[in-house]
Image: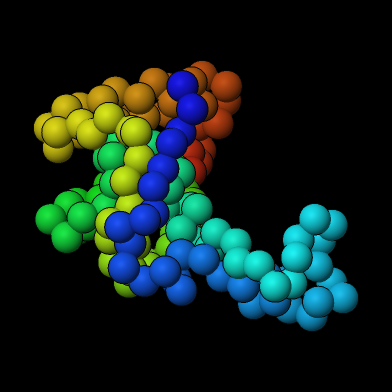
Length: 137
């Protein structure tokens, strides 16, 4: 299924859509197809859009932004990845919606634990038993 998203309700449009020159710098260095006088989706906003699938939440609201970020931190740290966006970045994206199905906190924790357990067991089975992500076993 395709990931559909909508940023029309995000208040800070200048955060969502960034001029090409701000993204790429000097107009002489613009990639092919990128026009200097147009705006493009902020890479951090794009990352938050994709993170909706990672955290199983359909968007960012004032009510869910803390849980969204906690789920994001947990998944990134569990896998040994750095955080690409901050809580402040997430707050600026309130109003984003996607077609991702939101899981309750309890269901998300259960499914995430099951997925990560399978992943860790597979890594250990491959002989990666000294270090799995940032977790020392």
